[in-house]
Image (tube, rainbow, N blue to C red; front, side, top):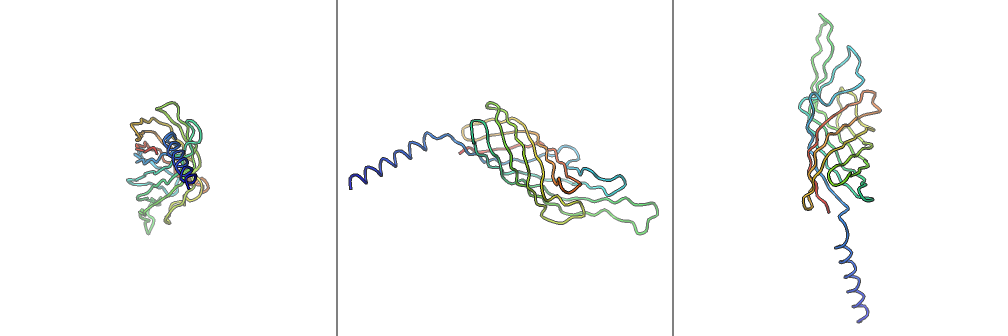
Length: 193
């Protein structure tokens, strides 16, 4: 009986001391994206063809980071991009009937699979693939499939909290033929645990 009790206390002591010595290897981060000028834009559109514009877009990211080695992380999570997409048609003079612009909701979810490296305490760079699903149908090209993303920026840690600012570039829908490109400035807050 004493031996079992001693082993239980010894095991509990080892677990508690191990947890207190362990470094914080996990992070969760939330970022809001501010768009630069007329972003995002569709690439590879034809001259004289339909034009696409996303009016007042909204985008945010929720990411989980796991430190694999000192300063090297794997990063994944969920990215959301959406609002209203406007498709403008080229009308021929005196064309009857005239084709009006089409306004539709546009929602895109992406799951990033990034490698991230920290340069000292204040700087980082990350990039990798985006697995994407467009949540609704639009007249614009479907952006589901595969994309690419990259970012580099600055961060500041205060206690267990992390504050970051960085530019981000994402190329959505690589397989669609008409990829959606978004360049944003991200402002984020994170928590280490």
